[in-house]
Amino acid sequence: MSKPRAKLPFSEETLQAMLIRVLRPLVKLALASGFNFTAFTTVLRRLYIEVAEKEFALPNKQQTDSRISLLTGIHRKDVNRLRGLALDPSFLTVGVSQTSRILARWLADPLYCDAEDRPSALPRTSSDGSPSFESLVSDITKDVHPRSILDEWLDRGIVVLDENGRVQLDLSSIVPNAGDDARRHYFTRNLRDHVQASVMNLMNEPPPYFERAVHYDGMSPALAARLDELARQESMTLLLKLNKIAHQAIKDDAGGNSRWIAGLYVMTEERETDPAAETASKQEIDE
Image 1 (cartoon, rainbow, N blue to C red):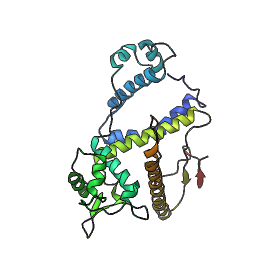
Image 2 (cartoon, rainbow, N blue to C red):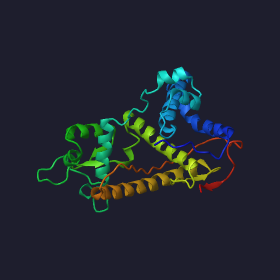
Image 3 (spheres, rainbow, N blue to C red):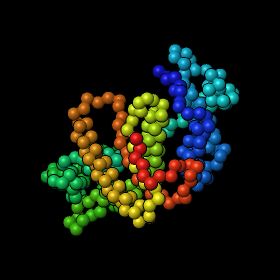
Image 4 (cartoon, one colour):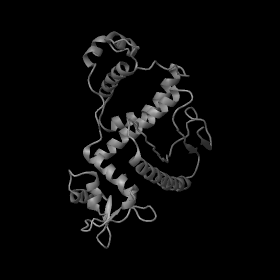
């Protein structure tokens, strides 16, 4: 059932200023990719029509071209021409999905972790049924040979072979050396989820989602770099812990259509102070 439009606690001018700041990095990405203004507005036009059709229909009434035109400001002929065109293709390729599932199991399943809950170094194969890289992959998929995945991961630096020929996971290389498909997928999914949570927090009282950040400005590059490294380490520790908890809990779960995600980002930026854009402050913790 479609939901009524929320009355937001700010003016159109305020929303415009907010969108300028949020969209600026995306416009930078579009320009760097050769995606010009005409192409960008074509996507926006189709997206406006799709969202208006799916999320702003009146209860028990069919959404018409005329009403979508009224809601969006897009000419009714364009609404009729573009309405119904799919705009939500999946960026999650089979390879990305398999990689994520294999890594999640390696990082969480006690069979493949050592006494300190770290991913174990695994023999390539095993003749006695003990855990191996081959069994790890086969637990997830039978469609791809474990040797093919091993060769790909060695090439990408996700794993290395130790002195005994065992397969060792390199945690630091999982994301930085991810292929183009994986980076596009995680960019799309993670940014969409964060924006969705932020939008729902703006449109509902009390805000339904946990969203907090710590900000410190006016510091030296050396201190910023030190805090950046610390934040990366602590964040990875938390994500690995949550992955392990979820991996164990889902085994006995009845199942359903709920989706859960917890994400973290860490950023260090060199920039000029813009008093018009931000309040100058040395520190801040989002409330």
